[in-house]
Image 1: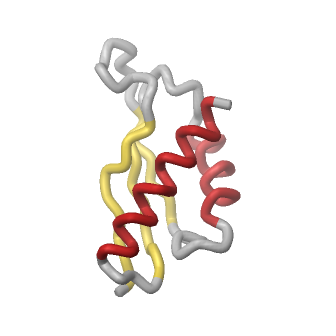
Image 2: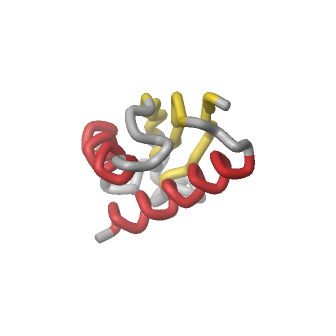
Length: 87
């Protein structure tokens, strides 16, 4: 399950940032989706809703930038770009 590992890593990063900033909740999560990640923005959003349930990221807006460059060094990855927090 490639999607599961991508989401687990993403949620760990969001959790780490939220705890460090003592955030009450996550408002927006911006991610970059590699061209070879095998996920569409819609599919990613579905997984995000499930992964965020019961966390400070539940209900956060997900903004996705999709790469069309299969030669990019991170073409298989999902990269966290930014997190907007309510502290």
